[in-house]
Image 1 (cartoon, rainbow, N blue to C red):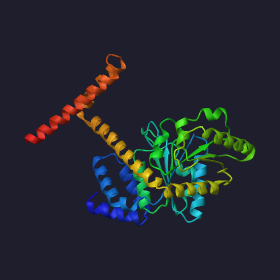
Image 2 (cartoon, one colour):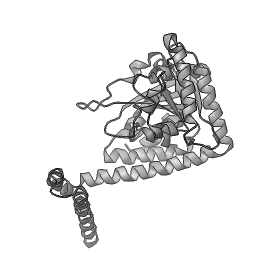
Image 3 (spheres, rainbow, N blue to C red):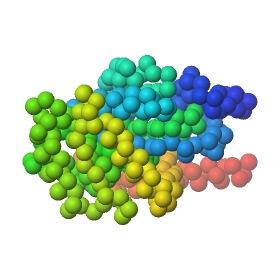
Length: 338
């Protein structure tokens, strides 16, 4: 893509052109080196037009009703005049690497709304519940004029916390049924939550959901809050019956107002940008290391030795890094002599 083409694409994204936005996201998700340079140039043009959206991260175990809730919330927001982007991360197929669940098929009514944009991405091998390029995708959606960006993560687990490094609010969806179930929820995930939502408060489980909310509320008093200015709220809702959805959004607005008044929102976003920068440094270094031909030639032997217990894993890693550093030093010397 030529420099002029990048400018044209950036202008189209700013106009809210959905096809241009999809092309831009595909570009930033590409692993090709030339595409990475183009993606960075595109983001550089658009960065001044980002930051205006409410960024909401939603997590919860599979089957808790995340997609049903997000669709109900998204439709509610569109009805109120908002433009909503939903970034969903699906488990990846081990064969094709593609998305298994296909979120657009799970949010049919929202996907048909002109003011909504749903972008499913396969999680691939990335940990943290989001893809490596989720933050860049979020920025592109903001540049395209979406004022609410929802990030749905794969599920609750030890590596899910990265969603908190790119959103303003972390919403945790839970099933009705406290007590023993509470023991199965990772403490770190609970401490990240800004609001806990007990879904499926309908039919036979309505009373159970109410009791569960009380138990979760009591349990949260024993945990360290994420923000000193905000007390974690626990609500019940029925995404299926569209009950409690508006109350959930009102909590998001109160949270956003609280963080804005205390300037914690700016501080949090600045911290997130630094964290994401170092995450990208780490990922890029690993990519470059694995792309080194000499490193690749030695990896099978070192992996086999470590697996067989012939050398410590730390020693094998040290050898890989030594090879990489020697290769880079040799390349620099060759360049200086030429």
